[in-house]
Length: 148
Image 1 (tube, rainbow, N blue to C red):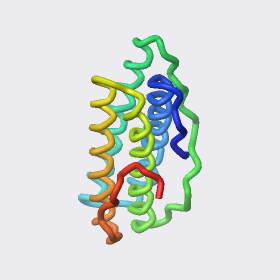
Image 2 (cartoon, rainbow, N blue to C red):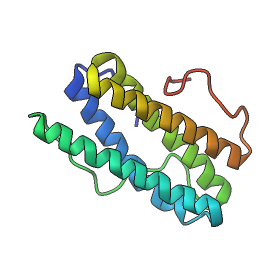
Image 3 (spheres, one colour):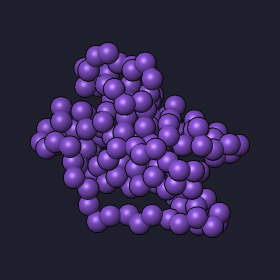
């Protein structure tokens, strides 16, 4: 899933919602390959994405916009067969979802922009934590959510 260039706030928020759906789905295969604190972190991440999804559904439906439908499933970018793959996918999920929220920032104002910035920061921090758990360096990226 690649972040498109949105035509306006409703399109950008709809695309971010679709990214949230995909992130929630991906945490299923991630969580089953983790144990202990990493599994707890995956559960917390999934719950955070679910909260943001729910907020977006309310925002879009009460604002007169259309709410994109969730899909039955999503293709993973690579097979997740062990802990290392799960951690790598968690990093990718957070980075990809951050990209959609980054696209929301320039086309929104007020509370929508504040929410987009909060999501972008949250996902950048979470991706950093997943990189640390996976032993991936560098731990941070210069511009979270921007394609490399």
